[in-house]
Amino acid sequence: MNTPDIRVEKGHADPEEVAAITAVLLARAAAQPAATTQTHRGRAKAGWRRLEREPGFRAPHSWHA
Image (cartoon, rainbow, N blue to C red; front, side, top):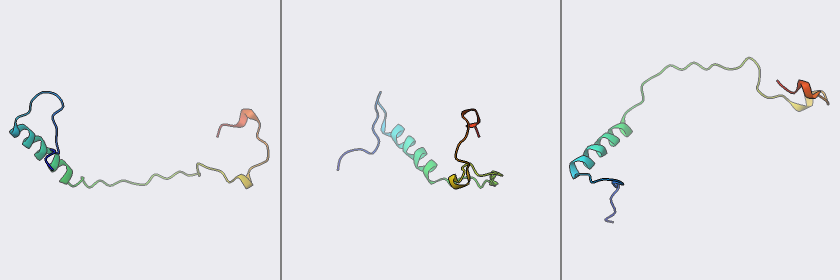
């Protein structure tokens, strides 16, 4: 297997430049995401309706939620 993992599409990169970008990409991939506190903001009402609880006909002007 002599195919390189990283290929320069345009221009000429020195081996040091390829090594530097590889180090940056590996460091980014290995970094742990910052601990963030996310609160779940649920809806007060479901975004869908059960069809068996809906009336049989809805007028066209009332099709919006």
